[in-house]
Image 1 (tube, rainbow over the protein chains, first blue to last red):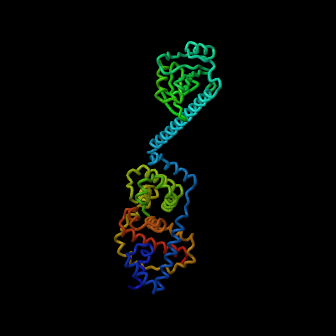
Image 2 (cartoon, rainbow over the protein chains, first blue to last red):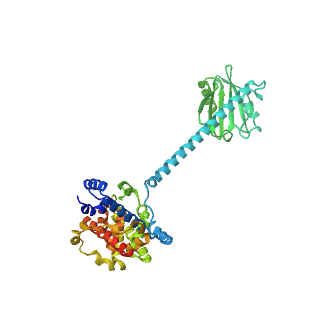
Image 3 (cartoon, rainbow over the protein chains, first blue to last red):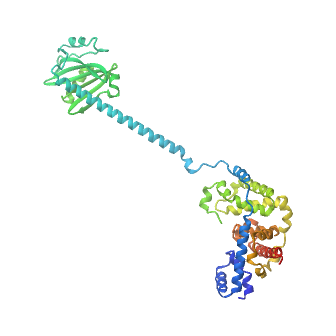
Length: 248
Length: 178
């Protein structure tokens, strides 16, 4: 193809709009034609000049701010914000579960601490040379002994016909609160029955809770604002029998 | 440059339109050759584009869309009305000859092509040539995009570009005193 025919296509070539086959043919021509190659260079220079000239006008900053204001309409909720209530609810649930779990662990820890404390009191009483301050198998002797020593009163069961016997009683302290500790006997076993105000025991005084610690068995319940805890090394069944008597 | 479809779907008008602000302004200034009119033109373009954004089809060419709005606003403006007569010339009748534009720019010496001269040469172009040339060279739009922006066939785009370049070279040569 003659140069004059290529010349008409040089701008199209530089605009990147020439057909592939024509582009290849023109490139081949440019390798051998210095006139057309020089023409291409000059047109490229013209393109660059127009490109840099075109950015001659810059917007005023105040005008830019004005346009930003026009354009800055409230954005539609993005996907993440669509899920915001769900995320918030999930987060709230996680926090709630964590809080409940923490409270549960704290309660568990408190209960365990309470059990340990009561076991210690029971063992300390049995280890003492004077395990009770009032020694009597008569409930009408033991109960009055506590008068004036406790801010509450309690009833003692009739044990006649049962395998249990009353050995005596003493005052005891739990969480800076005074209470009663009664010692019952079942064969050669000693069983402590602690009676405290509920507020001294707190949430540890679960209804009919039966638990074990170091092979000691415990049962607790609440009645009339008082917390009863029975603890001993007898079988759980025997412990429950005594508990049943105390509940009557 | 077409905006990828997956971006358009999630992007707002602000995301798409603000990055084009400087170029739209410069283009508007080239069309109107007046700062105040350019600002009015751009502001009205943004307002119209924002209002009509719901009609913009995601996945199509946002740049061509907003430039088309700017051009339409321009054509109804005071400056645009003066220029409209140029828009109605018989392009196609002359297009048969655009391929025969064999004027080489040999007379334009590269070392003398200073910016000021190019500015003046561009200023002196009829607006219909100036806009086609700016969309091609400055915006680097494809012929198809220019066709879509100006609302004319691709063949007309090519003929306008050809004549714009020829006129620009002639202006530059005249300004050089050649």
